[in-house]
Image (tube, rainbow, N blue to C red; front, side, top):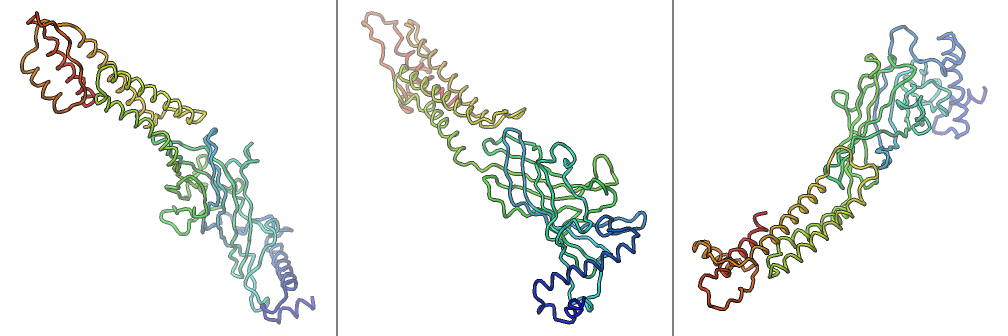
Length: 389
């Protein structure tokens, strides 16, 4: 103790590290002894909360919430996060005179030596305890009785998934931190924040998910409206530009083939092009199916699936229309069409210049053979199909 008394009279900056450690141990021993006398129980500083009067509550300030890591489990639709929460609270038992001890801070080497708020995951006492964990680090007390600490956590949660924009799907996940032993005793205050809501610090995250929104807020527990809990929510969107290109470009090419089919010439050539386009779309759809999550999309239907189905439907309708028109054009007709329709078809075919068919060969003995005029109308109808569909 003589060494300690001598240490008190020195400037704190001049004390060696091992001597400062001894000073902290002596200070903690003094505070622990006074707490035992105040609360009438051994190891009170370790076992009992700071307040002793009935009806008192402990105000725990949430200074900062940082998420360092985030990863997804696509199969189980879960999000895992790793980070910490900066907390502070008042403990009247941790007060001393700076003049006597030459220091205004006291580092608590182990959180087991001091009572701390039992803030855990909502699944802490279930089978998921092996997955979620919380641990206090860097506990520091000031001479005014203010205690600061960093609550390290790793948690997982089920997510609400919106697959509408797949493969750039959106996931919304919420994690909860609460007290299991002192539910009504601990009251949270979000600093800084408005109406008890503050944003998360997600700058350390390095992942292929874009954080669209994140927040931490306090709310009432579902099973006890007088108790409070912290809710940490993250909304993330997948950043997969290359996959979007892989899924979109092939079907766009096949759709262009359908639109450009009349420019390939005769009916038979157009039918071949459209059949190839449909085959390409089926191959693209198979590739898309291979990229589908193993558990599917649930009740939601991604827009890209709707686009694939629409493109395939248009291609099939266009192919059927061309086949029907091609079959109708081969029928020999003796009755000529209305002259205005023939002129209109000739003007369209001459200006659009999409496709053409060779006029049927006649022997010139029949003046009623109108197949050539009907062929002009059929070609014009086929040229208008891509635009009409």
